[in-house]
Length: 335
Image (tube, rainbow, N blue to C red; front, side, top):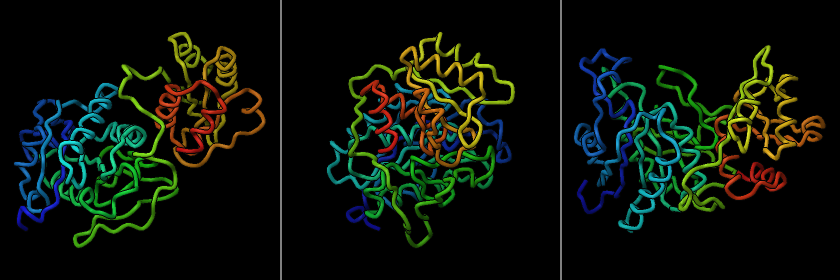
């Protein structure tokens, strides 16, 4: 394929397993101890076949272990995406390489704050670039193919691993080591990156980038929102500790189908009375929360079908816009 008819795709590297180099092909777990990670340009050079698919514009970001990625990195990544589109009017799409630990959270935030109209695809890998049968190479190639596909437009931020294309809103990591770790409970994939075709079968229904009401450009941080995990015997101590730490919002990862323990519920009621916005999610990770009479009377919101970590982020972004529970309930129904 000549350079004149290849699509142009930006590749932003943030580190993660796909950038990692161990010392032996069978070092598939403890490779991170070496702290040897490639930048985006080095990943492209290592898997140079990707340049047969597209003209790659590597963007070297600082290599950050994904458990350490938070607001500062999200803000910078959003800025890099906006800059890439501004500097390359003919850009077909953007791929972001990311560690899988927090990949779903980065994808979800970008889905809510980006103002670009080209596809943005997050990729990662379960095996390091140096590992036997690494998935880094094929995920890079398929991520670029997905970002370059005109069919990817208008679907929000996408996640691509294991040949599967998922929506940022619902996808979650479900397995520590398996290649099929990213799953979308209830709804399944949007499509597949097959060898001959980027094939789609459904679209996300909820509102997503670039048409959102959130703007983090001038923010220095997100409001503090914490998650309290329900378990047999939990006594509200975590909730009250978060309140004491200055939480502006709380999410209960309750028992399925969305029930906090009585002691947690009492702490949640206290929080609402103090003006803290509280949302009910479920530790099951699947299914919609019903806002019954007990939750409604206490002023506790329902997190729809978002898992706790995604409910937390939507609530934090909502709190940058409003503290009105009615408006926040609208936001949860919209996104």
